[in-house]
Length: 240
Length: 240
DNA sequence: ACCTGAACACCGTTCAAGT
DNA sequence: ACCTGAACACCGTTCAAGT
Image (tube, rainbow over all chains, first blue to last red; front, side):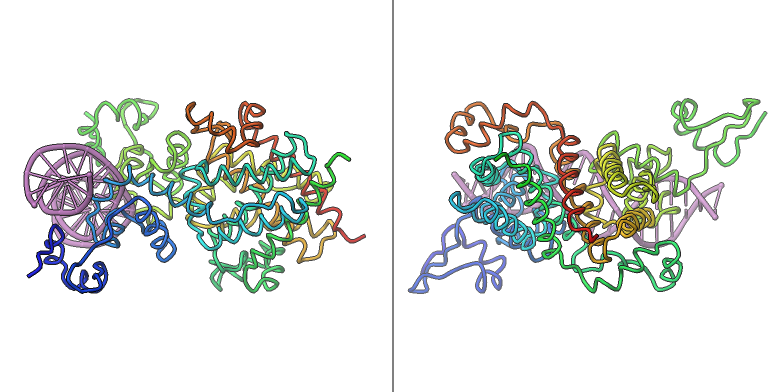
């Protein structure tokens, strides 16, 4: 009879869960193995959890449960919760394709802006994490570097390349921010009860007028509208 | 001998604090009175606390202590912590001067953009709160309405006025966001230890080159640079 | 080396009890 | 009507103890 080794106590404790989810069996069905915990596995689990339940619901205890491990075990592979946050931020930035330095700069910047917004739409929680942790992980740094490279190659001075990057980043963050704060809601009428709506018409005439215009938020369209204005405005400041 | 009334037990418990800070005396120095708790007083105290220590340090227990009251007393005047957050957001938006509808629209928008950025610089925590709570309190709504009014009066269609507002809001939020996330730090070199700096030069050539350019962040200047580009870009889309 | 249970110092919030 | 203490169900994190 096979001895399960160090994991046997796990089986005893959560038999059902272990059998169905967390243990994988070798081909001969004799030796249950549990994937060893790593920082990457923890970060991946955290990303999946935040995608499904939101970051505010993420706790060390719940994350441990997701990995069939006690919360305290995580600290063997991760410095603390902030370290996990940093990993999650890096995960998102690593997922954004870098710009092609040989492409026309306006097309490259437009593409990269849309790609950034896509990533922030897919993982809205990253905006919150950036607020808490900043954005200076290696992937964010690489992304920043390549985008600045595009501006530089286009002919912008160092100072203007910096301004251009800062502007692109702020535009993207700004829309991602609003999208994360108010997902799929009408900007102007959300939270307004019907009894307040009557008063609104006199107090907030412009908002009231624009309300019906916006069935829902098309953040991506609105983002692209502004992106084009910014790119054109930057192009006008390009020395020739 | 004067009987202090219902507040006497407070005096007994925190004599020192009460005498020096929380009790004010009538002109005849006989009757100590404690200002009664109100939602406004709680919100004001929360704003002051967040200004000094940051929002993440704000707790019901500490806020209570600031007002010489147990945490649970706050719930008599406020629904919960989110309600306080909403009050703090409204406090900030109420502090931004509304645009003058008779001023030239480009000047009015520039002024309002700067005023918004000023408020977010004075109370950086509001960006975090907007992420958690959204921005649909009465003061934010009024502010939104008046700014849209400026665009409308300038001749923008309803749809473009909405786009313009959204763009202005995102630009402001984006810079305020970055400023709040990375206050007075050099964007590119923060968190990079000296041993990593050598590697940086080859891995991140553009960032390395721009680093020395930026002794510190001039978010306000950078914000204004982008603001002008946006205003010019919007003006170009104005029908004539 | 890695995982664990118990513990610590915090949270927001409820509720019955006080005045 | 307003304030309070005790309690509940959570946090992140430490640490000595297990294997």
